[in-house]
Structure formats: C-alpha cells, structure tokens
Image 1 (cartoon, helix red, strand yellow):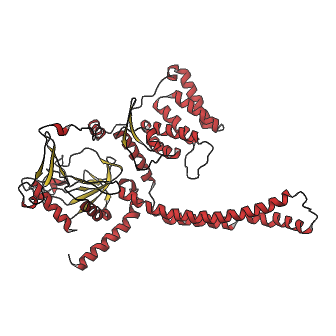
Image 2 (tube, helix red, strand yellow):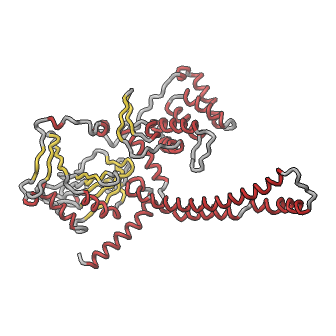
Image 3 (cartoon, rainbow, N blue to C red):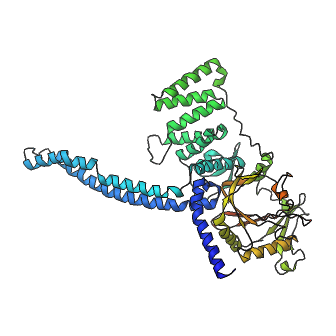
Length: 497
C-alpha cells in the first residue's frame, strides 16, 4: 500500500471513529461493547467541567447573598436601630421595594443554570440512550443469573454467590463501588416493566431497604423515591401471588403519601382478597425465572460458568499432557507453540501465548473504529438479539502486515488454508456489560442458510484465540475459521475482543 493509499485509509478510519460515537448513542448501543462504554467517559468529563463552572458561579452568588443576608440581619438584631433615622428609613424602603426583588429575581442565577443547561444539550447527542440504561440493567440481571450472584452483595459492590450458608467470593474489584437506592430501583424497574418479577422483586427490595435508611435526604440526581420503590414492589408481589406482602407494602406507602387514592383502593382490594382466601396470609410467592426459549442448554451453560476455575485436578490425569507443537511446519520450528491437552473426549487443546500482548492491542486498535452491533441470521435478515450482546468488526489481512503473520501462524498450526475463499475475514468482537453469546452452532444448521447460497460450503472448524490486555479487560481473539476440508467451502475468521 503506497503512502497516498495509507493516508486515505487513515482518514477513513478517523472519520468512522468520529461518526461511530454519535451513531452508537443514537442507536442505543453503548451498553453492547465495553469500548463504547469507555467512550462515554469523555462526555461525562465535559459535563463535569460544565458543572464545575456552574458551582463556582453559584458559590460566588451565594457568597454575595450571604453578605446581603448578614447585612440585613445585623440591622434587625440591633434593637436600638431607630426607624426615625431618615437614612435607615430610606434604606429599609429601598430594600423592600428594590433590593429584595433583585435578590429573588437574580439574573445571575438564571444565567448560571442556563449555561449549564446549554452545555448539557450540546452533549446530549453523545450520551447513552434510554435503551442503553435498559440494556445495562438487563446485563446486571444476566450476570446475576449466570453466576448466581447475590443482589444484596451486588448493591454493596461485592460479587458473591450465596448458596445456603456458604458464601463464595467470585470477583474482587480493586475499588469497592456500591449502588445507591436509586440505582437498585432503576434495575428493578426495568425488570418490572418487562413483567419479569423474578428479577424485579430482589432489586426493588434492596431499593426499598436503602431508601428507608436514607429517608428524608433529598438527592438531586435521583429519579426514584421510597414511595416509588414501595409502589412498584407492592404490585410486583401482587403479580407474583403474594398478596400479604403487597398489602403490607401498600400500607407502608400510605404512611408517606396518605392522600394517594389509587394506593388506598389497592389496600382495600388486597384486604378483600385476603379475607376471601385467608390461606394467602402465610403464602410465600414461588416465582419462576423467566424462560429463555432459544436456549435449550441453559443449565449446562451456566453450570460451566459457575464452576469456572474449580477443576484443579485435570493436571493429575496421566493421559493429559503438555508439549511443544510444530505440526511439522517450518514456520514453527524456531518458535513452537506451547500445547496443553485439557480434554480427550471431546478433544480440547489449549495453545498458550499464541498472540502477544502487543499483537492483541494492535488488533483491538485496528478493529475499534469499525465496531457495529453484532447480529445473527434470521431468515434473509441479520438482526441484533438479546442472546448476543457485543459489537463486531471484520478485518482483511491487507489492513496490517501483522494480520498476515497471524494468518501464517494459524495455517502452520492447523495445516489448513486460511485464505479466502477457504476462510472468512478476521472478525473482532467487543463484548459489552454482561456481554455474551449464548451456546450456538458456528456452522449453518439449515440448507436455506446464506452460506450455501454463496456456494462456499458450510463452516467446519473454529479457531479461537483469547488474550488478556491492560486495564483488566478480557480480549477474546476468537479466530473462527470453519474450513471445508474438501476445498469447496468457505471459513470464517473471527477475532473477539
């Protein structure tokens, strides 16, 4: 590639990088990739700058108001202040006719808040959409399910699995970050709005508990309140069949908002239901977790996730071994790959240090400007779905010589042709908050698949690379190459970030 072509490619990458930020926010896709979440830090830093300027302006204004207050208060505290003094009488009349009006209708206060609002409106196009808040909340629920995380622990900032009396710490963040009552309320409300009371109840319970502990403290940034949380939790319990809890929470709501007629009617309704069916007084709601109809192997899938890292005895099995692998390829003679057999049936092999940290960073940098929401085939269309949360980008090996080297390394190890039409281009996937791709077949399972219409054959093999990079972010370099061993097919190379 000549200098002019490289410059054109660089300009195209920069244009896509600039456009992707606003586009992601408009589509509500910030939550689906951690790179997009990281970019959301920039507008918040700018908003912090706006708020800092607003606070400094308001601090100056408040100092001036304090000066005025102290001046007038000192006059009222002096019992010897003679109203007969014409100068004092004049200033009293002036204060009441002019000074107080200027204080109450201060242009400075309006200008300060107007500047803050104008700055916020300029940033709005770069801010996450409401769909991102919903997606992020569902991601927390997904993590809660897959790893059996305790909601109370999550609210405190700890990632624990509680089974009976046993508490297992699954992840220890460097900085403990707890959730507020309003944070928990928002997660619970997303589940509530979906009719998912299995998840709504524990999150709303935690919100109610935290709101109770801080009742009377007003926080500007909060959207919910104790009354809101009680309202949603009461109806969630009612929908789940626990009328007794619904009644108790509704009565508590009326203590804080006694004039709410709707809640008063609900209390009468719950009392009537309990009077007609006294056994519901002690009934406990058994709420079933919502089904995931597209995933038939959910229990196995989540079981594997929950036992990750708890198989320490595999190295004691004599038939499993480690070795240096060259596959009789000259390309690997001087630098063989470190091979570890970790399972025999099915045959699973782990190759250590297949890519370096610098290579992983390079691939991430090349792919990031091109990331778009990952999709799955649905008939003739490609659609984003809840069971695949990520963004993807496809990279040709002409983008950078390092990708050619990686292609040679994969080909040497597998003995397969990784060039099109036998393999697809490299796909890089960046997973978002709670990002995942539930168990699926890489190969086409229907004769109507576009893979067949492309006359390239079905996918037959997957090569996956996983790397760890800085900032504690896991990068799955998922080189999925499903080769057709009869040389009539087409593969796919997929690098997941």
